[in-house]
Image (cartoon, rainbow, N blue to C red; front, top):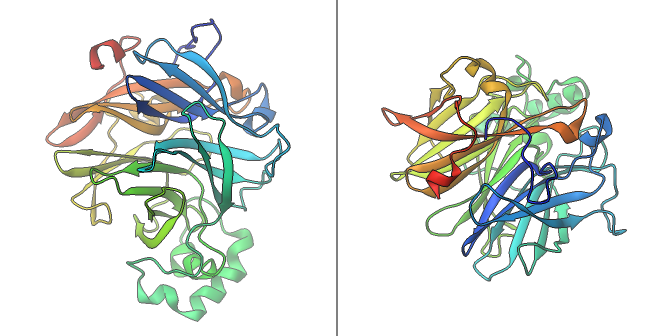
Length: 347
């Protein structure tokens, strides 16, 4: 899918932005942010939409999987971003998403909802910041220094969300220790041994965190790691091939597209080696106008990179870009397709 309007089986444009896909039996479930028209569509007024397909091309509207119009603790006008769903070892369907209870992006929370069926309804279980009171497994000693922590508290109100020379001199990590770490753009990843992780932009977007989940997939074990310190990456996408872990993300430029980044590691916790921009064709400097959201892995070498072309002026008109991951010397490559959809050849 190369960015044109994608209609569901009722002829209505698919409304599942920033989403991810769960395969359950012979069916695929596509979860994403339900947008409304105009700039107000950048906030959540409905919830998380889900679609169902057996071929990845024709999608049936399966309704609102997580509905915030039901008078629960989350109110319309909040921010719900990048919902992802996995099935726990106990058979529950578990949804994680980035939550802002207002539109300032200072809340920086994760939220978890559960359901008995992939279509939902999902029930909110909890929301908050991850791992309060716990240092990452790979914390540098200097980030525990009180002077750096106090400096972060002083500078926090004016600290930018994108690359700057000041943040590495502070300890945003230490500042947030007691309340839990900031969490914005995120994704879920389940490894071969069924250990699950959530990866999210933290420390005022300067550093990614990788947090291990417990066996219910609804909470944490207390083990987490800092990845790509002070590289300002968001929109994390993870997948595994031939025993190695791969990452594709973006820089922090808000709704505006930028050059993607990629990396490889032998262990999820790192060390990671950056591989550069995987988008190699014309327009690759802005990732073909898109930003990644999920890697749909159908087989070891059959991976679809799912991305969004955001339209913040009319959020409901955001488009979807699905690209096959190609390989060059063990480096992931994304090419702008000259065709509409590869899915029939990949299933």
